[in-house]
Structures are given as C-alpha cells and as structure tokens.
Image (tube, rainbow over all chains, first blue to last red; front, top):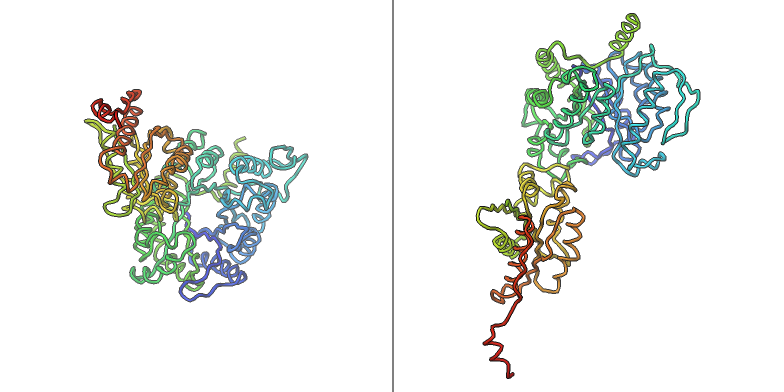
Length: 363
Length: 192
C-alpha cells in the first residue's frame, strides 16, 4: 500500500491573516512539503499541472526533477498530467528524462483538465476532450515502447521514423494512472491497458465513485489483466489533523469556509459527513480512511490533500508530522493485514523491471 | 400514477402551492399517489449543490421523487418578469436528460395577469430543452383569479389536469364539452 500527498499548487490568501504567498514562496513551499513527505515516511508526492492563476505548477517535470535531486526514496508523480493539451511527444520525452534523473522513482497520472479556456491556449478544444485523451495516450504508449514510431492521427502532425529520447529507463515505461471524476470512458481506457485508475473522490459522495470504480474493475478483468479485485485503484483524501479533534475543527474552519472549491457553501460538518474530508484527531482520520476500503475494495494508493486553501507552510509541515507519526503506520499495518495475498501492490519501476526481465527469460 | 409536484412558492401558505394542490387534485384518480416537493424547504441545499456539484441527502430525495415519478406538476411564482431563480436552480441541478419524455403540467402564479405568457415564453422552452412532454394547457393564476369564484380558473385547472392524466394513461383526452350558457339565460337575455 502506498501513501502520499497530492498538491493542487494553488496560491490562496490565508483567510485568518490576509497574507498571500508570492508565486516564488508557494513553489518553494511545494518543494519543502515534498521533502518533508519523504522525511516522515510517505511513499508518493504528486503535483498538479495548471496553466492559469492562481495555480503555480505549470511545469511538473521541472519541479519533480528538482525534488528528485534532494530525495532518495519517495515516488514522484502527477495529479494530473494533461493528456489533452500537452503534446504526447513532449510528455514521453519529459517523463523518460525524469525517470533517468530520479532512478526510476516516477509514475504519472493522466487527466483531461476541465477548464475550457485552457484548451485553445494549447491549440485544442475542450469539446474534443475524450478523443484527445484516447488518441494522445495511445501514441504516448507507443513512443515509450517502440524505438522507431510511424504514426498519424487526428490531433497532431504525423510522425515518420521518430524516436523519442531518452528511451525509458531500463526500457521500462513509467506506470500510468488515469484520473477521472465522472467519465466512464476513462475508467474503460484504464481497464483496457491494465493501467491504474485514480478516483479523486474528495469533493463528492462515495456513491458516485463506487459505480466508476466497479466499472473499471469489471473491465480490467474483461480485458484479461487479472481478476477485478486485482485492478490497481488509487483514491484521494482530504484531512486536517490536530492531536485533539476540537482543536482541528476550530483551526481549520476559516480555511474551509473560504476555500476556493467549496467555501461559502455547505458547513464543515455537512461536508465531512457527506465527503471523505476528515477534520479531527489522528484516530478519526484512521477510522474514516479505513471506510474507503469498505466502499471501494482493497486498493493500492492513498493520496491526501493537505496544502491548499491558504494553509501556512508551517501548518502543512505539522500535518505531515502527524500523518507520518500517528496515521500512516497504523493504516499501513491495518490495510496490509486486510489485503488478500492475490491482490498486488501498486507497480513500481523495480517491480515492472523485474516483470519485464522474467518475461524476456521465458520468451 | 405516481405524481410529483414541484412548487417554488416562498410564503406559507403560498398561492403557488394552492395552485399546485388544485392541479394535482384535478390530475389524479383513485389509487394515484402525490408527492409534493416544496423548494423552499430545500432552498439552501439547492444553492449548496450549485457550489459543490453534489446534492445533500434531502435534495437527493427530492430529485429522485421528481425523476422517479410518472408525471410532474411544476409551479413557479413570477418574480421580476420571469420564473423564480429558485425554481430555475432546481432544474439546473438535475441531470439534463433526467426528465426526457416526462409528462409535465406547467403552472405559474403572479400578482397580475399581464405575466401570463411566462408559461409559453419561459416554462415551455425550459421543459422543451429538457425534452420533457408538457401538456397543451398550462395554468396561470393571477391574484384576480383567486377572487373571481369557481369560474374560469377552475375550468382551466380541470382541463389541464385531465390532459395530464390522459397523457400518462395513454388515452386521448375526451374532448371537453363546449362551454355553454343555459337556454333560459339565453332566452332571458335575448331582448337586451
């Protein structure tokens, strides 16, 4: 079981004191948070990709490469990489380069992006979101798996005799997750390739995602990648912890009430009841997170959102201390004990490399 | 028939609810069930859904009442020359195809009869977009209608209710007998 954090990279005014970090401060804070994640024993750090204010992470592989140089264990990932508006050729090259620099500690999550105006900035059209995700990803896979690619499609210029460089580390492409919050087409896509499916269910009730994950699991089995319960599922989560529950609620409430996504809407109490958000003690976070397995089955990756809505860096680092010391070790032990032996861990570079080598031997 | 009634009146009691209840009574027969959704009761939930993208349990119940019914009566007050914002917001949070083919009876209330075309210029296009199936007669009730006895308003309510009931049952509506004036009254007024 992998545990980690994912950052949206928003620059948001702290509602308790009116201060707003500069872009420089926010970018440096994201790096500090990633380093801290490794220090406290988390397995994954993922950054979003955005091309519009108030978000800073427009260039994920630059940031992840910088983090890779200062870490040694943590897996570097994205949440998400825009498969619609990025040229798949550039994704293939950027992430292969990152793989080499990070010695394989890299995977990535594909997403479409739901902000209409962003698409034309990159020569695309949001109405073609699904076809773009399908065509671009199919090309991306070939660029990582075939040394020389001839290709033509609907959305970019044809390729003739093209070799994406550098080649993936050890000829093992990075593992790919597909993130979706509402599109069955993306669950189907993930299932078809035997890739991971990540449901960022933090803003909506569980019922909505149970259907999507069930579809992914059933189609994963249909396409012969294993049984439905062996499919590779990742889930989001959103937490704010203090040793005492009432302190957590009191401190987080102004951030919740003014948060860009759900602020000025439901109360903190309603939202924690209806969504995965947990504001409370480490034990409450443990209890709530354990319900995810009951709702969605054994899963492989749990990412928490901890650094948004204007929370100060110091507070975020304290969150990571609490997670690393009091929450993750317990969850890891409990979930590992509950998981049947035939349900796999999330693929890593090492496991994919070993699988490839044994395949070459048997061939 | 399972009949759902949506009314967006805000006062308690509201003339929209009054009209909705009369429309429901004119539409049902023995064995039918009626469930009324007062949007006032879930007004905050509707706003929260607009902000978060998901319904609260109370709103989810209301939505399934409406989408699961065999027919719908929808009544809005006229505010500032149109249907109320609350009324529109409720239909905004429904899935766009959740009312496809649904028989609907449209109603509206207002302080003056000058707004009566709201039925045809606003409500009909809204339900046309949703590909629902509104019956031909919509009922608009102005303040003056409530004071005019059991006359024209009740005739429109009865006609609309019969149209909704027959649309749901698959029968064609029996043509209403033409309105008439009793002959003794005709004769009495003949010399005027």
